[in-house]
Image (tube, rainbow, N blue to C red):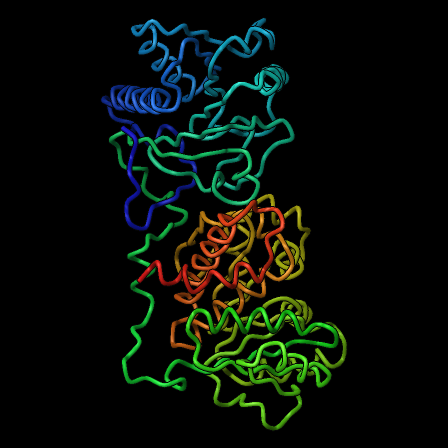
Length: 467
């Protein structure tokens, strides 16, 4: 009953239960079948994770999750496992919950509407205080499975088992922190039409985006990237972006930086040709792609560089301070990729960072609608918005929350664009390769203390793993 991941795994918005069963005379039977198949899949999962299970407590809500929990309880009663059903308002204390091996959260899943009531809030607090492993059905109680926004009293799950399809709110932003390990249970029914929200591509899908390298090609065939950034005191951002672009296959990377940084950058990274951004030798016109914003700054010099770059009519990636200048003079273009984190996204949309965090999928879609091209909304569960569908990256780790990893991502995407990939293809492939490089780097030691240069060093291997 535990589903394997198909190519381009679909990710859904939560659908009302009535849409699963329909409104025919057979609707009740369909709903009951779904409940029992979900119960069977949950039982199989629990057996695999907890083979010595003796007692299990099930938190029973009033909706569909509650019915699935009751179906699960009926199955366990036939096995000799001790089952305790706990409903909101029941007088079961923390110490009693601690006598169980596992807690099943079947209080509220996709049916969350508004704040939790006092009795639900109280039971969530007791369940969390028990410190027992918690398995949530579809999503932990208190988490909005459409946006990923948790309520203050959301139950933190160790495992989340999706009914019929992954839910987008569980896989991006704060939702990832509340859901733990996620698995989809196949309930034998197609997910309701119209609720597809995003796709997670598989290796074959990503591999198809990468152009073949001919045996007789030279660096000019592999594409020229010009990076405009590196304001006074900030050559490191350009260096990280340039390393990333080369590591994913760009043929030539040329940097236009503050005149005081040109020699510093050339000495630190000899493969990157560095000029003052004002130099007539900077090959703007020969570039297949531009990257604007890495360490650019916010002074007069930076504004002049931004204005020059944006008028060249070249496909470009806009990152860092480039997004700052774009927010001050908004425009829409079809050929660029914007790579904001939550704070930069908020500035571009004229809202707060909290507003973006409260609905990351909605923010990504709105950024792309306003500014055109492709938007890569960075963070846990990075989202790529371009075209009719979101692409969600489930990889990456907390160690990547460090200075410079955004420059590595921007360089990765720009390096792929320089090789001829469309902005959407480069954003999709670059986001996944970057995240997987971060995971490779994290496996070499604890995530804490990871450097952006560690991620850049793993890009070649991460890309090679797709080939």
